[in-house]
Length: 188
Image (cartoon, rainbow, N blue to C red; front, side):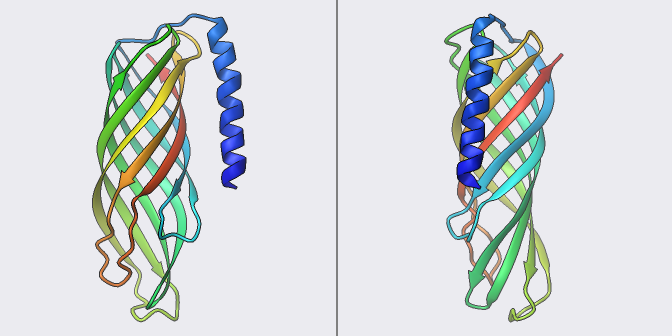
């Protein structure tokens, strides 16, 4: 699944980039909103998970900001007490620094904070089978590229490393990990 997502992302990025390179669009001093998809994998999880969300971006020539809300599907963890499935709903904010190298291509670096509403679903054999929820705070660092497709739409692809520890005393799992995402922002 991860290879398929990577190949699909590279293919879409190449197609959009080649189309965008043929045109010269400049998006700056604008705000927009759009959908976001991605893949998240924590080192302690058995498998990674796809996610969907919505993002709001404000973009100047060199600086910008992003606010996003996502739903991350199930990741399974095996612990000494039994198996647990974790789902997350992150709400994050990021500050971005752009380095425009062409009118329609702006690589960027980013840093941000987030609140991660975490839902634990314990299996029936777990020592404490009651499901639980909590809010964890984390931060992330990353990089990406913004590719203008028109005067009012841009594709963005980025990588983030998430620093997030779980506070659950039973599972004691690490939620830090790799996040790869792609979004389409419609500016107004």
